[in-house]
Image 1: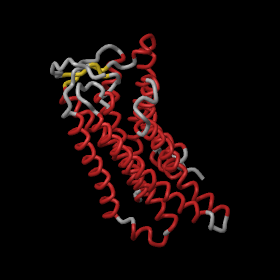
Image 2 (image 1 turned 180 degrees about the vertical axis):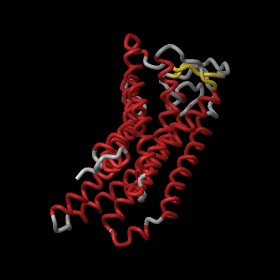
Image 3 (image 1 turned 60 degrees about the vertical axis):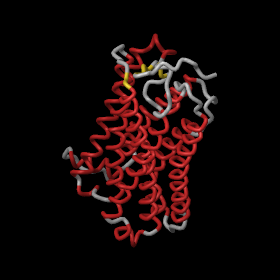
Length: 310
């Protein structure tokens, strides 16, 4: 039932993690460590890619763009969440909430389509290796990155325009940041049309890039299986393993969070999913690409004056 109090709301208050009040300091310590590791890991990846000429390839160009996007993504959400866990949270204005939601949507969608661009890069590298440098030239790479940013900006503008046209009659956001569904629940008006817009947009920006990535990998795997030597197949699979790991976790979390019915999960379950894609997924990128990727590990050894791995 919709609330009848139509008093104008000028600011929101995040309720954070009410089910874990007794463990706020523990959560703060854990999330702070993960946040610092995420920042450090992504900064290291961007730095090592920029200074090591061996990594000046399209694959690592996209990886550096993803790392920068993930870093900004965490900066938009995590600092305010951490401050709320130690009692320093302040109300956020409607404009501030709209700004946070705008950058969150833009960067989240940018990440989705960057992973798609990386999948296309792997497809060209393995399925059309002789023309790889011609197809994946600097202009094409720049256009792909520009395209991912443009899609993110366009969708964010549509979503923000839809959500913040609504009248609000409650100020308590049942979340730790301005996500679309928790904010829409504060509206006095009927949100059915906005819910439909949200599910259509979410489906397009998650299902379309995810589908393109999986089509790329079907073609990649079929090509790899045709390679005669076992060593060649192993090397080809190794070049895709890191990206595929990140793709599965990223799209999996996004699908669970935004493609399920509104009432399917409890609030605690929703927050657990949100923590996964705002805290753990951004950390996954540097962890996977430094622990599983030989070229990045070799670059780190060169940077620190050690002999590259054999």
